[in-house]
Image (cartoon, helix red, strand yellow):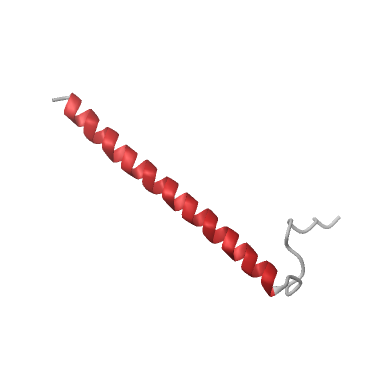
Length: 57
C-alpha cells in the first residue's frame, strides 16, 4: 500500500504561483516569530545569568 502524500503536497507543478507565494509569506512570518522568540530567550538567559553572578559575590 502506498503512503498518502503529505498535506498540501501534490505532484510537482500542481500548485499555483499564488498558493506558493501565500505559503512563502506564512513561512516567513513564522520564521520571524521564531527568531523573535529566540532573541527574547537569549536576552533573558543573559540577564538571569548576570543576576545569578551578582548574587554569588
